[in-house]
Length: 241
Image 1: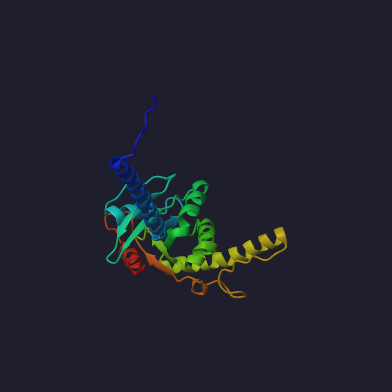
Image 2 (image 1 turned 90 degrees about the vertical axis):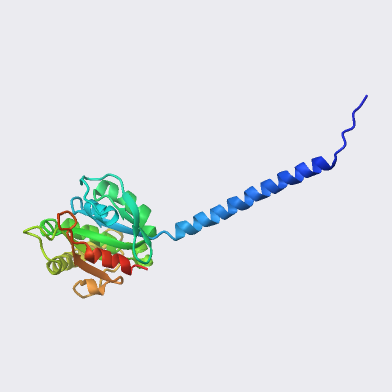
């Protein structure tokens, strides 16, 4: 004896309902994926870059939370949202230690619209070689140049007795970068017989920041004191579009 199964209206309705649910899931997945891709492209990162102990973490804390934080040598990035009058920016504090800098620099430089290069104004003359080396790396980065990222050099710790002013620091860095770019070019040429394709400043002229492809500003700030001075960086952040 055999049984014959007959499909009725109820079965067709259940099948149609399952198809609609599956189609709806697919549509929602596609929409979410498109929105996720758009959000990734729309990221607006401002990177805080500088040597260890330059005051980046203190600056990050005041910009985002308006309060001091116990500073320490960080091995990972700090990030948070900065709400300006015109838009939202993600501030990323890149670790200054050379062993971890490259990892986070390579991750975030692709989406950055601005770079705040923080300098310890009190020790800059002693550490000028290391400061210039890191700044050279930032200025000659192909991704940064392609993005036309805005750059500001923040001469921090201006409340210290031995702190150098922004004009002095600018002159010191120009002289050191002038020497460094020649050294870098010669090193590359000696290795592969080719000249360095990345040109910092103008050929056959002493280096000046005004010769760079990206506009570079200098400002004086105090990020770790009872009387913080952050107006220059706040004004600069407001100008980022």
